[in-house]
Image (cartoon, rainbow, N blue to C red; front, side, top):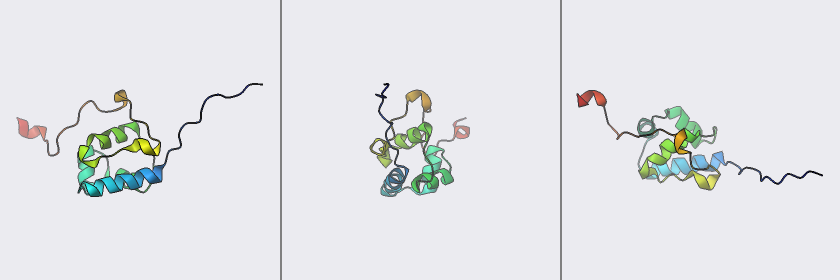
Length: 102
């Protein structure tokens, strides 16, 4: 008799994560538009995440975690921290425009 010893992966709570994201965004004083610009995520993506309609990618989680004012912590909803190779290697300051650097 063969038994499976592997544990089931943690259950992902999209709705709980969405509420947490919305609460973090509002507490930080960010509109969806401002957060979208800061993270380079589409406003519709943020809306879908906040409503629990979609599961975030590792890159989306990394971009949200990078905004320190959010205090976004997805791990308590079953989302592991993203692997560094899955995320961008840098984040630019809000308002950065390379064309004005010339």
